[in-house]
Image (cartoon, rainbow, N blue to C red; front, side):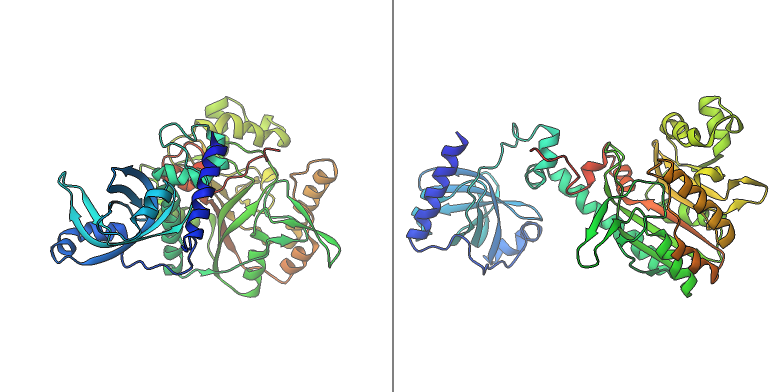
Length: 445
């Protein structure tokens, strides 16, 4: 059935070319977006103003000497009316036009007898001939994995997915603008790194042919951003992709977008207040605060002091985090799972670290940055021992970073925001795949 449709469309394509029409022109005339034509319909129709609109044909009703089409562009949808008496090339559309084709249509706006706002075509041209039919809007692409695999069709058929991707862009812009207004400088740091660092995660490995050495896709930009603090920058941020070779679920995608921010002469408490100010417009309700130890006790009944450092984080992620629904700052994380955070003065086994958790998801991770090079070396050496013992998520000993730290890094606080999770939360999406244009999937073959 599908093969027959494709063959028929190829036949129509060849007929168009044979009749001297270019079904894939480079120059297209568009004078107005469809949404704009609808917004100004009364004025444009009253003066019989000619418009030129373009878009994909989403519906087609052939009534002999009349063809009605639903034309859709990025902004909206309008009905086009093709009349035999108005178009010299009407026969071409009769023989060759299909749902899914892109069309340029020029003419005045008017209302049909049924009151439908429409364009009366005085000139029309197929500007892209589609060779495959779109799935039915009612019966096609119901399988979730197929939707993600053929995202371009998913977006064509499901306007709400397009709206989420557009909203994602707007959210990032709002955050970026707020940071720039607050005096932060946007910077870029390497994605290819000699050593992975800045997080506890398994990295992706690649090979540079000319240099003949392995590189890692960054798991975080943190250590390079800190080098910029050492260099003299005081308020910096980066929004970019990071890559972690870990599981895929509703909260995790191997490549994701992260905001990282660093602020010299600020500490974790000031940064918590700034975080709330930055994100409160998106995350409504009363924000709460509880220590890591209190949360562990409240939701599991377990005492932090009685747990091994290796099992603490796993217990927290599986048994505590999913139960925290309201916006909540979790504070004072154990030093054993916070290798880059400054120790808390009142208890050196804990750190000046916080996470913002909402709806069971970690949205923000921040802390007072460890800037003591001797203490940082001890922690990195401990992480390196764990790595060599088989823990592939442990941090590596980064001698280049430690050397930089020995030149002096001023007191600072920093945070990371998972943009994908934040957007999923704001758009009420139950899976971050819904707000990522092309989520990672296993190949079919």
